[in-house]
Length: 346
Image (cartoon, rainbow, N blue to C red; front, top):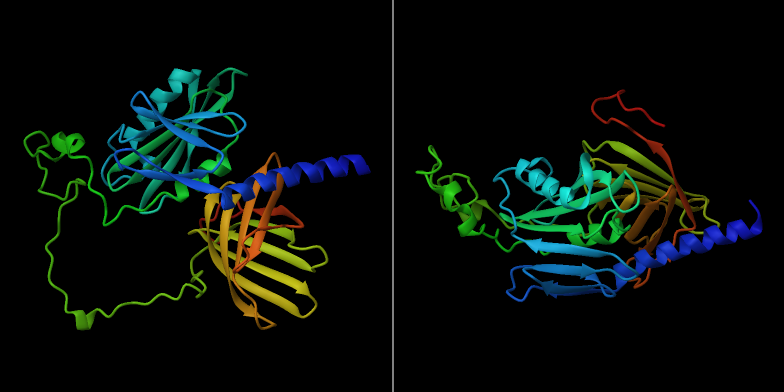
């Protein structure tokens, strides 16, 4: 690789990282006029109301439709396996893609609920295999749905993931829209339906609890998470800073993560933590578990994978900006984590 090519790659990686850093550091909150929902989005993006829906415009191009409670989810179903949501997503895809076909679903982390990204491919503006994704968040019986107004859609996977992962959790479990649940909760229309709580779930009998038997459980925010039962499915290796010996990151199931950083000889720290995100795009919080030195603090990491290139940033506690990760690459993938020995590491 010559010097010019190397410089171009470095500038390209820096541009991608700066975009992700702006998203983390520069955000604003949109609240619907009727206060039915709110959403954090990049400061340079805008949301406006138009003809019964909301239009989300991204910096540099890209427009999305955003609708609230446009469909009633199936009670008790995860968003990723809800046939009602999939049918709704297919109907949207057919409006933008010719000969559209189902391309799978990605699980999306949503506070106080479930989320999913339904994917479709078909003939769009660029090719016969253009991609369209329909994003859903389900919280307390309410839904939020987002999709691009054109196919192929722009590459805003990182930004959209962060927006959905930062939706406000429903306070006390928001009740579903009663107008959308009349038929479902009516025993005359739905034979065998037991009186429930509006989420199509029977209400179990409750017994007052003796406060003395249920002491308040205090959670230490700096305590490392329990990694028991979590299995590794991705491994990343590289250097957090130039000159360190090594950095290794293990992405585990159950949204858990483990890491080891050897900054210099004799200064090795092991971390445990949690993450949100999918497919190489992660927001990670790490807490030191063991360290050869004192004064080691928790760490945050943002990773983004695009076109085989991985870049990102990290910051220690109380740092307001993220620092570039010197170098990192994906070195291991486990294609199956069900049972010992069935995983295949590439």
